[in-house]
Image (tube, rainbow, N blue to C red; front, top):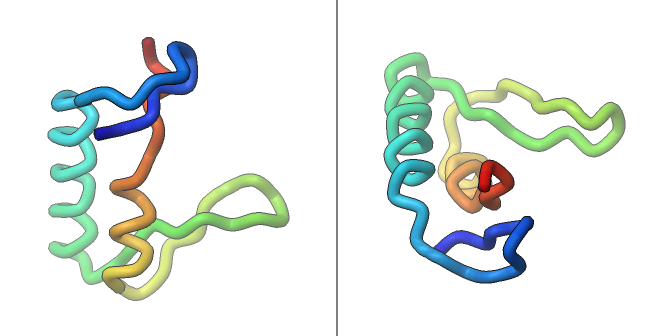
Length: 64
């Protein structure tokens, strides 16, 4: 289940799950993770780690 920001509901988001699974595949291929950066509102690329990969997969739906 993924939080839909616009609808304020939890719902399945199979397209987002598929997208993020492919992103995580690329991360694993290159040994890198995408992480959140609080100061400038961007993201950081770091050495591959499960914590950041889990965080990325917890993304909310803001597309519809």
